[in-house]
Amino acid sequence: MQAVKLERLNNAFMEQLNIIFGTEIKNPLLKNVVVTGVNITNDLSYAKVYFTCFNEDINKVLKELKESAGFIRGEISKRVEIRHTPELNFMYDTSLEYAKRIEDKIKEINENSEN
Image 1 (cartoon, rainbow, N blue to C red):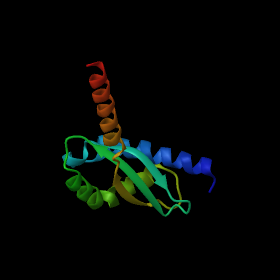
Image 2 (image 1 turned 90 degrees about the vertical axis):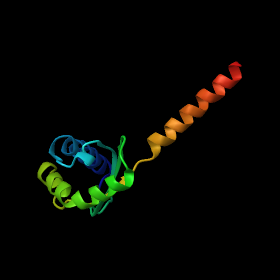
Image 3 (image 1 turned 180 degrees about the vertical axis):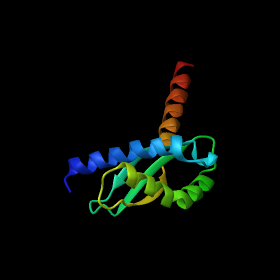
Image 4 (image 1 turned 90 degrees about the horizontal axis):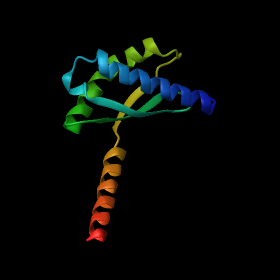
């Protein structure tokens, strides 16, 4: 599959997943989930769905996501035109936490250099 088509499909999945989490999911634990990225394999069999959530226990959220994966996959298949909807594998995105730690360190260094 062409890289441009795959990138477009990744973006379509990410957009629709965020809509599903925002409006369709009844589970209050999953209402705070924000999809930050999707990587679909070239053969379209798997999709890594990177997410973050605020003020929630990540392990509980991951458990609920795995249990809801069938419903979510079904909703995606209704919204995105694709012959075979890939299996969804949810992965917590640590990049936001990492960026926050770096930002905090830079602030700390700047404050120490001013003193």
